[in-house]
Length: 530
Image 1 (cartoon, rainbow, N blue to C red):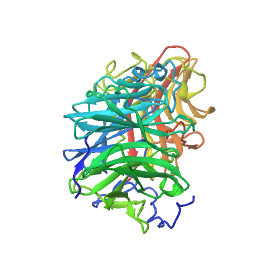
Image 2: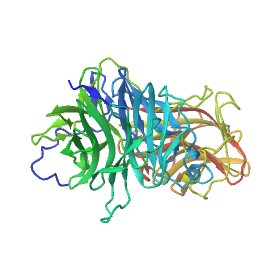
Image 3: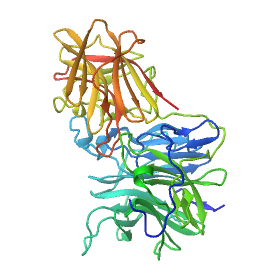
Image 4: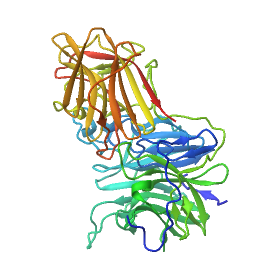
């Protein structure tokens, strides 16, 4: 077993590469209930992952772009079953005013990749925003509260940052600069900076470039058995692959190895993640699949085999480079199944951590206390007409990809007024919704497929159930019910989409051209097939 010191704590490639070891089974994912797991372990949008182990518990972060709270924090006992603890950044306007409900023009921007570390009895998270720079926050408990985000470098064009503490206590920061540099105008230069002891400032004169290659990013810095390991990914003919540089000193010279082959159409290029050691002494790579589909960049777990002091990701191939693995034994036995999506009866004083708003929500326009046991959403004007993606205060969860997925929401529409619409939605590159529209005192169903509407029946009562059901193919069908039992399909099927670096989101919304009316969400049921 290696002694670990985190210190803060196509075409195939040239040569002959092994064939893909096995193929994914449609719809299988996560904990299989028999001591094994199937990839993906999280078949939903958990992009730009990093992971660490602290005292037998695993923690991870995932980038969130324009969603609030920002930078999702997860926890697991076995690297397979994860729960969401919350977010590092409760108010996105601390990063960029354009992430607020009254601007909403940063889709796919906002919070990008970062790293989580544990040092000095605290959790540390560093991340970048492509337009502003590099930020950090710390917490004694990964569930929060997190300190107010601090700017480390206010300059655009930086990406995929990670802190590191050396044995002498000196703190460093590794990060990619995506813009052109130097006489040759090279892009994706990876810089190493020294930081002040509190980690909030870069020390002047400490900047140096330690690597540059096509698309080099996804940086992590480790120290194992006295050697420095710089993890990153880069673009090669076979696709985006995981790489590692190794040296006896941060000054180099660095040796380089490719850690895994990729087959983009099948494995979707696992590349952005963290290498961790389980209590058993075995090692694993928790990472996203980097090619987006409608489910987003899903999370997969790969075993790590150490060969000659190098971590090989997945199954060791004949050429010494890893291959994707779709199934394996759980790193820790006897752990219960968990879920990162959830239903909700809105009975508590705060939203469950699985929920995120699309952009920073408008204060005073939603409440869990005005009518206890309900989520009240107040309607106000969209920033653009006839565009669900321009509606403020849309409360979302990630769309899962399993054999069958179903979200059912029960609404009380008694607070609606003329001009208002409220309902259930999907959105990414395009959008669709099933809602109740009120005009002239009459409430009617309306299915909206990216702007094309299908009118439904008039609604006489104040309670209605709206449902979206989709399968592994991501084709959603809306339906409604007046009693919560018999559901009637409405509208054409809708293909869930990928857009702005995000997979599909399921959302609750209300909107009105004037600020008037509300809808009370009684309950949400979210069912996912195993």
